[in-house]
Length: 532
Ligand code: N01
Image (cartoon, rainbow, N blue to C red; front, side):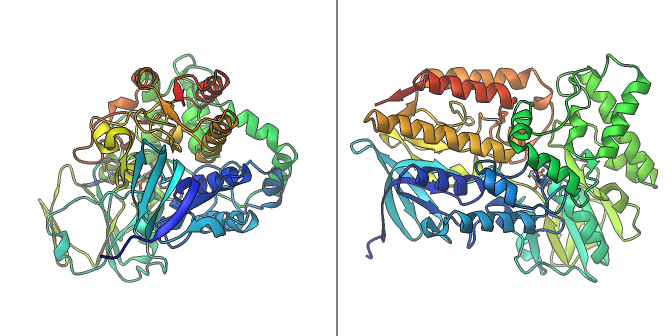
């Protein structure tokens, strides 16, 4: 039997080389730690390495969806569009890796299989498919939306043509010219890719389980005057955004939707619709807490769908019934308009379910749809999927999978009791996917770096969330979610998209109070963590 290759002993191992892993490497290395990053992909970039489907771009504005840890970096980098495309974001991350000399500590094409904590040495043994190593600290930067979800539809293995998942798109791209294409799913990835696939394909059939609300992006080249203004006061711009509930520059109207008359409401929604983007959701203060307020926004978007889509029956099928914002709001370029094209068909799988996949098509209850290829835009096992794909074992050999069998339990989304020196970046229980991810990542990495520096300065070697602090935090996260309309629909925030996954609302709503709490915990000698 061959011995596993020894990859060395480090102060810290980081899993993943996306936005989170790259900054963690830079920050920890700057403190003098020896760090090794393991990345399953053959390149850096995480989400932006894998998600190369047509139309993939970020729906947070590029001037904000970027690092702020180096003012020189944010001054020198030039974004070309209001919303950056996947290739541009990947170029940005490659620039970061080069500029901060990160590559020498990253092992690409290396998948972490397990991480086991040894209580005697207070060290983690991390096993990968290319060997193993040990580390004092293990930082999980494996991504919230990385572990893909593909439904097990009978007959899938007999399909004769190619199948694709938006989250694992071929690097060489896909030419749909002349093809009959099926897209399954109508979330953000589908909503971005469908208009472009429809332009190329001979025929596109979209299989929809739940219609989604989508706001036009109104993407455009960045106005040099706007860039100049933001760059002149970048720190202030970042500070201001950090004070907003989602940590992004969506202008928050403090009024209730029910406090103003119908004309004023319509004016506000129209203005936001014309401006485009996720800022639509902060049109009024109570859209995510009050059903009646929410209905006014939902009605406005349903009205827009009826205006845009010429066939009334199709418009009706495309009109969501759930609370707006309950599932992640989408941002599009020409999504609803695409259903006016003669080569596009919408199938509502609630009234006409997919029964099986045939070698050359899909058979629904009412028809056979012949297709040459299938695109699964069916999302991810979000927030916990990439963590639980590894065999992570803490004290007493207890696995994370076992501990989280009823749903994830963390303290601040940063640590979990029984797993000393294991840090999660944007983990469940933190604002994460309900915030602008890049500032959230930086806040987590900075907090983790501060915590490690604190341990070192006191000659300590271990930090672990206490059970009591974790319980109180989990209760608080649930209480905040229960005060909103988020738990009222089947979203991936709740794990409802993955059969058998426990139904628990995973992110924490409210970036500013969260940051305040993290700072307070650190200031009180890491209250709620046991240090030894
Ligand atoms: O995945 P999703 P996504 N049969 O889970 C459907 C971020 N993101 O990749 O709603 C039929 O949202 C499923 O139906 P239902 C963003 O945070 C950002 O699109 O579960 N359909 C749904 O319609 C986003 O929210 C950007 O009923 C099935 C779709 O597949 C997150 O990533 C771009 C099915 C999955 O939608 C995930 O987005 C892209 C089945 N068995 C993504 N199973 C931007 O920045 C699932 N579905 C713009």
